[in-house]
Length: 116
Length: 161
Image: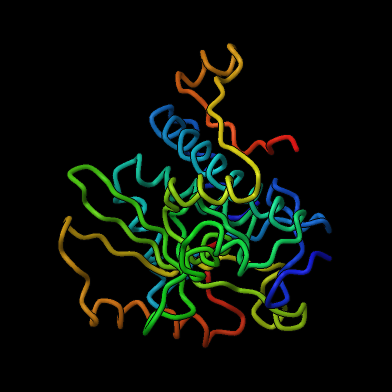
């Protein structure tokens, strides 16, 4: 186990560290999952970048950056527009009761592909 | 392969790992010649919540490293004079701004071995913090780059263990 892992394990014994760590990890995971699901949908549809850009009416660089490490704090309107262009939609789904009691926070579900 | 432009990468598992079951990258911390570890000293001095958030973002990026989208939008590729660097950007109490500056350690197995690294890694070099609505100077960034150059001159890398 490296220094990073040892330091994290030691810190996580403190509830005042563990809670913000777990909250941040959830937020990051939810955001990343949404972007990656959009990326998978895009690949599955075989749509060109030019076509995707045309459908969302944004500049090409904002679309490109969204799917790489170059984008900070992706904008929800762009994400919604991309999902729509890919025949999908975003949904917010409550967590299962047990997890909700632990986290006291709702979960953002991700991207669902629309039928047809 | 879908007909996408510019040699688009293939779609990957939304979990963040590629189809080859890539292992997470390591997270390492640059150690200066005076044995100080700037990034760890910074994290130790940060509010606990900021330390925890930085660690969570690092763990997420290590699990799904660039060029994948990772880090929840808080991990950013830098540009201009900081090209080749990545930063994690967080906002703390009173909107104080916290930044952690990182380099990627990736290459062939021979090159990684020359660097003393068993696998690719995120090298956490140093950090800065500033009040809201203030800016870092070019001299601030120059200091960051100097540490990075010093880190990259070392074979094997000098890191905290």
